[in-house]
Every structure is written in C-alpha cells, then in structure tokens.
Amino acid sequence: KAGVTQTPRYLIKTRGQQVTLSCSPISGHRSVSWYQQTPGQGLQFLFEYFSETQRNKGNFPGRFSGRQFSNSRSEMNVSTLELGDSALYLCASSLVGRSNTEAFFGQGTRLTVV
Amino acid sequence: AQTVTQSQPEMSVQEAETVTLSCTYDTSENNYYLFWYKQPPSRQMILVIRQEAYKQQNATENRFSVNFQKAAKSFSLKISDSQLGDTAMYFCAFMKQAGANSKLTFGKGITLSVRP
Image 1: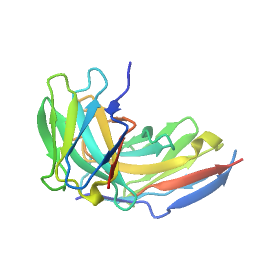
Image 2: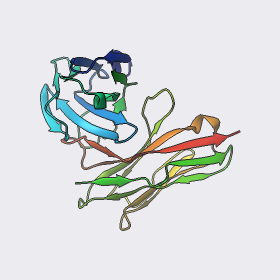
Image 3: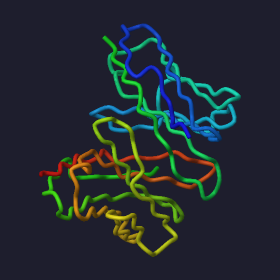
Image 4: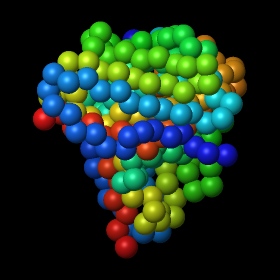
C-alpha cells in the first residue's frame, strides 16, 4: 500500500507570492491533517479535513487555507507569502474511528520564502 | 488547551545502551492518547509507540517502552539496546480523542544521537 505522498518536496517562492501544496493520503484514509514545522515553533497544527469538510483548525492567519477533494486528496494554500512561512509542511492521513489513532505522515514539503 | 513539554533538547547514548526520553503534558481531559514519534533525517515522522490514558499498563513495542504516570502527567520513552538507526528527533504528542478529532499536539522534540 502506498504511503502518504506530498508534492512538491521542495519549493522556493518570493515574498508576496502564493503557493499550493498537495497531499495524497493512504488509500482508504479519509482524514487529512496539515502541520507546519519550524525550528522555533516546532510542529504546529494547521487544519484537518474529513470528507471534504474542514473539521478542525489551528491558530494560523487566514492566509493559510486548504481543501479536500472527493478522492480525499488535499491541498493547502498560502497566500501573500511572508519570510516566516518558510517551514517544513507535513501532511498526515488517518482512518477515522474510535480505535484509529495512528496518523501516517508524508515526507513533507520544504518551503523556502525569499 | 493541551500542552506538551520536552525539556531536554538533546541526548546522546552509546550503542547497545539504554536511554530514557522525558515528556510531561498538561490537560484537563480524562481520556486521551499519548504518542512518541520518531523523525529521522529523512524527515518522515514515524509512530514509535502509543498509550491510551485509560490503560494502566505501560505500552511496549520491542525495544521501546513507556513509563506512563497519569497522575503526574508524565510520559517517558525508554529505548533499550540502542541502535545507530535510532538516531533521530523524537517527539512526544497528545491527542484529545480518537475519531472525531485527530489533532496532535506535539512537544518541541529531542535530538537523540546514538554513538557507535
């Protein structure tokens, strides 16, 4: 079974631009979560999608948005990029159910804003 | 809100020896889940071990075991017979409940180096 796939792996953007990152979850997983990882702030939760609906949202400005498609693939978008948005963005997928707690992570997208 | 604290930024251990990584957390919830994740240089986060708060028995997975002290809100990871491949960042994480809310709250992480 293929793992969580994130594309692209690396990205360099200029301040003020926007960027879209993609995440394909493990087949059968309907929940997709996004995290931002930086050396200063560590891992912070951005949002979670389930069945094309945002179910949970972290404390990030409105410039950060996402969506999920009917095949459970998810995208996150960051508009008006700032230098501080440089980070590793991790996507995780999971089954949904009371006993399903394991989140499977992708290798991340390394975003550099210059 | 939940918080997870890992106070040791770095640790080093000799190959084949045992090392313990510390984690404390704060929550008002009674039922929750705790995790240790490993992030090697490849950046892919891998689940090491999971503990359900309602279970008194400490979880074990091969060379990895936890010491879960619910009253003290402490959740440490013991790695026995350390191997070079254990070199990675280790994150302690909290999940409020399964199913409806799969948000993970992470600690800052600890860099573990295994010396040959």
